[in-house]
Length: 172
Image (cartoon, rainbow, N blue to C red):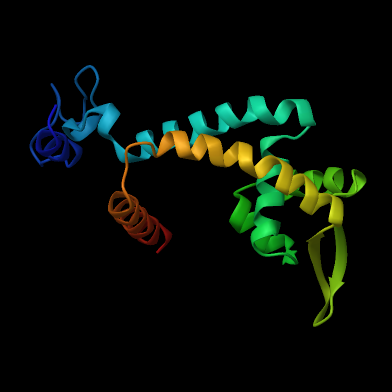
């Protein structure tokens, strides 16, 4: 399918509804959008495939995706509160607390009270946590390089801008 046809199929037209009002034809969602071109489904599949590919690399290091995601967020901005970590890791509060407990037990993170607020706990990478991040990061980047193979810088800039707009729209 050429790019123009794919773009047209990705944006359902009103009136392009399945056999009965609200019913989808095989391989389509309601409103006539093909399942493979439905952006939430496609983004979910991409994210899950990247995660599954990385999971096999993490297993020998006894690292889970949730633990890796937490280390990555802290490597990007150390000293996050639990609320900030929930937002950036997309891990529910209770599950994230368990992840932080495990990371702390393994000496990869430490918790400290915020200097500006007595009731806020901030999580920091330890030296061992930074080393673990540096060990795993090249593996993650290899999967990313495979995923963006054949895309030039302009494609990636445009894709990033579109996905940020998509995020902003659903985050309102």
